[in-house]
Length: 220
Image (cartoon, rainbow, N blue to C red; front, top):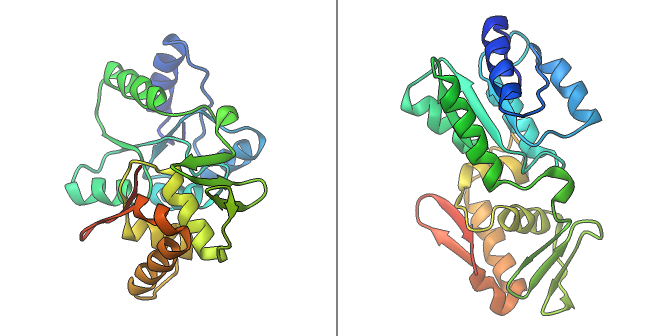
């Protein structure tokens, strides 16, 4: 939990521990990063307004790290406008809670998120979909057991889509995570990479679906 309001931090920590969870709380982003390098959490509760770094910036950094790209993140904030929520979800948050809220709602959201997620130590280093296999340790891709040569960007793009299998990944999120936060190129760059990736995957290229005006989805 990253929350700088001590009273809120204490209430939430007590409620989560009482529900049987182990909790580490931080008031500053820098302390959170240090702990993250020691051990990965099963879930992150992240306040948006922090003294040393904006919560949205933290989410972007977490989604660019290979070890935290799939760790569930629930953003907690006083902001309640729809655009704020969309912005948080678009850059990689999994859920969004607006203060004030009850501790029972918090516990329910945490339970639901953990049911849908995979523990860090259990995460697969080999991703499979249809006849496509992506081996992270070897940084290799196989289609029908035949090696498939991909460029760096094509590999990262495929890994992102396979990691989020069954979930629509927006164009903005893909550009951010594959090309970087400061990428200012046209989205046509993404379309061209999707086209060549589909071609290299041959028949399995049909697994990558276009969601018009939103992004891409990889589904069997």
